[in-house]
Length: 142
Image (cartoon, rainbow, N blue to C red; front, side, top):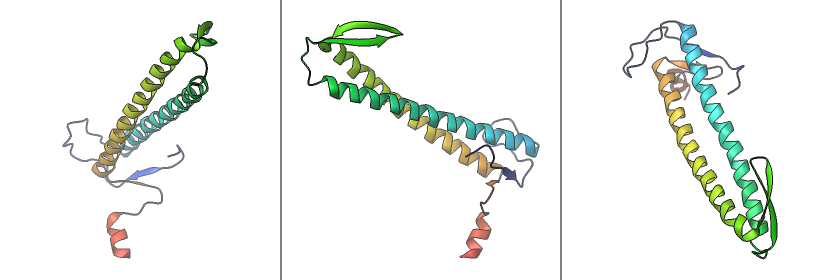
């Protein structure tokens, strides 16, 4: 999925059954395909970032859960370090971690949707990535 991989299209124009703008040149098709791939990559990168944040929150929660709830605790909120107790911070950390987990699930759905969109686009314009064989050649090789 690097930007160095090339896509080729054996069909320069195709009728649009999905209702989108008809792409008429090979360059337009390739640019649109690469834009879709880039969007999918951005979703995956964002998901990885959020999963890392969620894992960090889990580590902090695991560290704090066994401590006395009245113990002094410091938390960074919007760049400001505030003093609280473990009992005050722990529920907020749980809530934020749960929202991060829900966001990861939403991103998973978006990644799957974008993957289906990419596959449909590949089939519509008969796009093959470098190194991919066409379906008839693969069937004949068996």
